[in-house]
Amino acid sequence: MVLKAFFPTCCVSVDSGLLVGRWVPEHSSAVVLAVLHFPFIPIQVKQLLAQVRQASQVGVAVLGTWCHCRQEPEESLGRFLEGLGAVFPHEPWLQLCRERGGTFWRCEVTHRQAPAAPSAPGEDQVMLIFYDQRQVLLSQLHPPTVLPDCQAGATPASTGGLAVVFDTVARSEVLFRSDRFDEGPVRLSHWQSEGVEASILVELARRASGPVCLLLASLLSLVSAVGACRVFRLWPLSFLGSKLSTCEQLRHRLEHLTLIFSTRKAENSAQLMRKANTVASVLLDVALGLTLLSWLHGRSRIGHLADALVPVADHVAEELQHLLQWLMGAPAGLKMNRALDQVLGRFFLYHIHLWISYIHLMSPFVEHILWHVGLSACLGLTVALSLLSDIIALLTFHIYCFYVYGARLYCLKIHGLSSLWRLFRGKKWNVLRQRVDSCSYDLDQLFIGTLLFTILLFLLPTTALYYLVFTLLRLLVVAVQGLIHLLVDLINSLPLYSLGLRLCRPYRLAAGVKFRVLQHEAGRPLRLLMQINPLPYSRVMHTYRLPSCGCHPKDSWGALCRKLFFGELIYPWRQRGDKQD
Image (cartoon, rainbow, N blue to C red; front, side, top):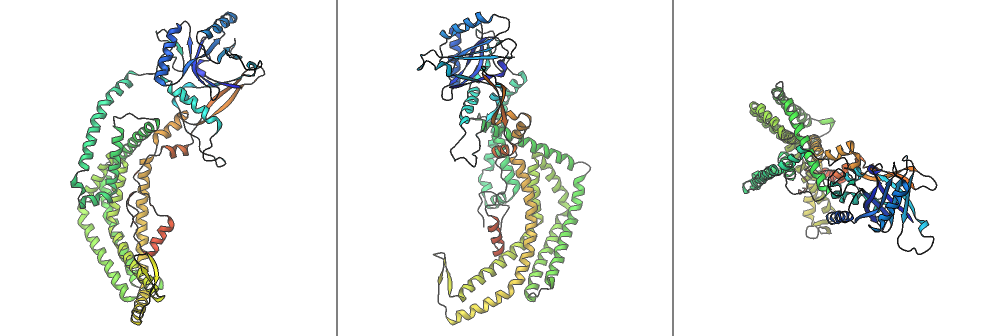
């Protein structure tokens, strides 16, 4: 049988004593947690171990003895350590010894029970594995991904043993609160042997954060109660709140602030990591927003933007007028229906004239509007970007109206042509059964259907051309808004704290371990060094990505092309969970 002994690297140079740890019989592993030094009283050691077992729910016990041969005689010390096995009985009893010079190690396993066969004691082989106790304690072991050649429930054989080691060290944190410099009756050596890492300022900040978080949580709950008032559920306000990106982003940030200042303690490491990532995301958002605010209010940039905005809107309106005049003629040499072409062109030109009048009416207030938009950046860059997306939607509202008019007219003709085509074939659409059934028509119905089909068919190219042009313009505006929403979604969902841990302290996010051979000689125990493999950056993003309020279209590319072909309206700005048209 091969026995694996996990020994902390921080204890390789400490004085002789007892090995305190946990024995895992399922994996034949001994996880050494600390070294207990002389002198000590056995009853006090047993009381300490009982307290640790009760607090951590880990079977901590004395596993054996540790001998560091420096100046003391090896024979007398060895006989003394062998006698301790009667005071702290454990099966098996482990004896680790580091010889003079620190190059050679000796490891023996003693079974106090009678072996089944005479040759049984000689069959035990010890594999000594060194591990960094601080890294293992602070790291979080992530489950491995299932390989393509493995079954769904299959996991590597060593995964369970490594998980037990990580879990044992993490749950035994209560044992590390005392060290060899304490004045208590029991002196231990472990990763905090140089003293418990604590700061007075950090402790004061932790104690003061409780009342502050409670006060801020009360204020946020008051804001949430005001937002849930019935007044904001009335039709105009509820409609605007569901369509404006700024309202969605403010609600999302309110949820983040509620999570940050919540007084509820995190139940596991995943919740703690999510809270830390949320704090980092909010701080990054506010820092970028303040940077944008300082840039906008410097050198009167807001005035320059206001002076350039109205001419740009006039230029866009003039280009649309030229486009409509081109469509009212013979675009690309196409033969259009003259009467319908003139009606549609004048109809859209009238809307453009209304829009130009609206822009010139709002021009005196543009600078004040931009000043307030820049001031909103103090709430975060995402709020300013969401407000920019809403401003773009308002400035291009006439393009959206053109798209809706053209899409509805085109959709009406497409459905009319498809219905009349079924009439030619002696079919009709059964609304109750949602299927096409056979039907017999008389001569008058066929004659009227033929006339309507001919009219719609010859008017279709003119309508389709207007629909195509305004759909392309609408898709251009949607693409610009989509880029803004992608940037907002990136800031909202970026796990900045996890990425910082992966960059600065990669051992905190462990994907697994690797072993390096330190010594492999005949007659000596195999010595290995366990090193932590960090989690890849792609998996860090996938595991710790924060939920966001960005746009997530339900339709595939094929469904989107189908909607565009049949003239159905698309609403790419709607949020997740909203009903699509």
